[in-house]
Picture (cartoon, one colour):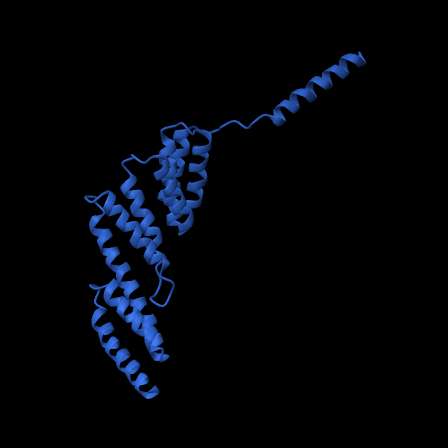
Length: 221
């Protein structure tokens, strides 16, 4: 009798152990996860949307809805202003699906991730340069894209920011009486950004720089 009871408890323990270490069941289908993720996204709950779309990708990597999940994850990061994560997600989408019809949108969003970080003219202009490059890449690959008009507007704003920054640095040197350094910056405005409305101011300071450089040189003779 004791042997029977012992065998009973051993069998219960083994069954319990199997249940304990077995992988959890996927409670929701790919469609259900997509629907929930889309609903959370539309409500502005982007972190929750990412969670459900990532589960969809992980549990159903070969589902047709996995592509939707990849795109929505990138869009959710963008909405959260997690721009670096968004760029990585968009770039991964482009790498995995280079012929997808959404590629123009993906390239536009990559450019927007950079553009949305452009600050004032006294700040680092790396975001403006990256945005300019990304918008130009979009227009080069898809010259007839529906994002053409918007991209041109942002390109003009990037160029304006870069030109104003160049002038700002030149003016700083000018005020510091570093006329040669200032002259270099003002000439860069003329050569690199000829059509953004900063040229007239740059020309005026080029004349002043050259005048001051000449006067300083005469004093040393």
